[in-house]
Image (cartoon, rainbow, N blue to C red; front, side, top):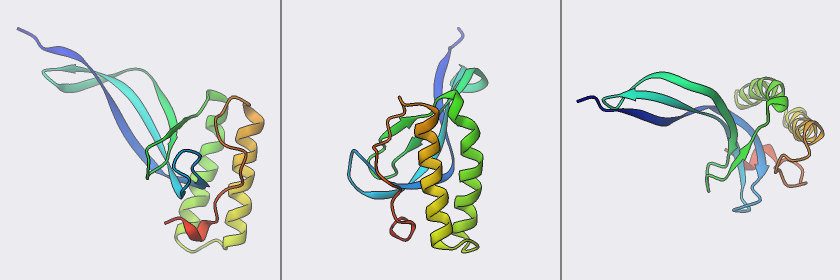
Length: 127
């Protein structure tokens, strides 16, 4: 008897951008998450099935905001900026302007992206 199937695996890539969550109304540093379906044999994941889905996730309420394919090139730059800022190698003002530019670029690329029309949260408020 063979037991096979699939399961979804979630990989947190890293903190992405501080924004005010439209769902729980907290200022939080959203995580960038990739979710992929894996084929399993005897509950052991063997290989991925299909493309990964990409999300921004509120760490407080787990509200997920979906990225579209056109928005994916914007992510790498913001991940780098957030890691530099967290190491105190970027000023708050520079990081705030990068975060606001990132959110504006996301809205410009696709109007269906469900980010509320707010500015990014103050970086000092998120941890």
